[in-house]
View 1 (cartoon, rainbow, N blue to C red):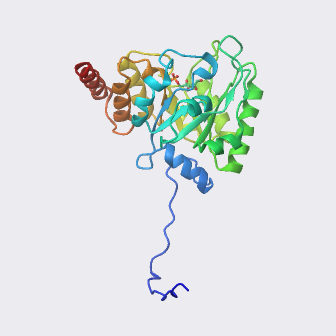
View 2 (cartoon, helix red, strand yellow):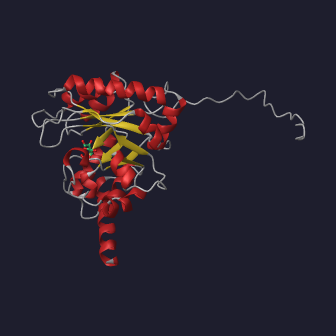
View 3 (cartoon, rainbow, N blue to C red):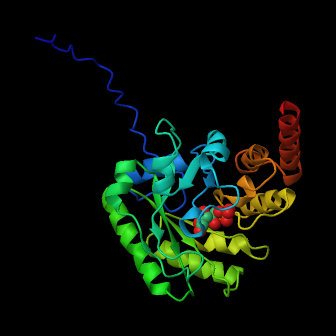
Length: 295
Ligand code: 5RP
């Protein structure tokens, strides 16, 4: 027989039980599992995240810099808060001993050779939970040829995610012919949030980005977009954070850089250290030089 517990007296009757507001914008009413997953993606200390996006192969095959994910990307994973990838790469290349949270690409269909907005949901919630991911992501093509289908795909993922405690990250996709301005991104991000996305990935715009973040009731992270000179990419990240973004979900400006580790360190300094782009660029240059000396 186990010993009977001798009842203690530490009831702290004068101390009300603490309850905390969840640290992420618009997320306070979510269930515990959703919040816990979001708290693994976004650092609770500052509410920010550095996501490393390597999912480009789902529509454009072996993208420059992603030809050998095992060789070029795995060494970067320790520098990110969250890895965004496809389930194919996760299962075939990423070691299960990796403990970073994963945001999984859950939409797909057309290749770069076809109409990109013609996407379907390409993964079900059962597999998301089996893989232990912290969020599922899909493209939403506001203004695109298959706009409605992509929006309804999102709501289906949101519904399944709510049943399973898995947040949805909506990605506002921009087609070749679409205008990329604050008005467009206000429209696109707000539609995603109104219809249930837990957070939204979108693009930075030089004019009025703060109106995009302020009118979206859930956190926004920015994509990096096409490869830019390192200083320009760092300046964009700095401005996005200063203007209300909760982080970056960056791919090409990291893995197509001549110093991917340098860029990871520099982006971290901006997103979590509040450093200015000039200081972050020095961090990138220093890492590049150090790597050159090690060779
Ligand atoms: C592809 C995506 C990418 O993850 C996203 O575009 C981020 O990568 P990059 O910084 O290279 O733009 O959602 O559709």
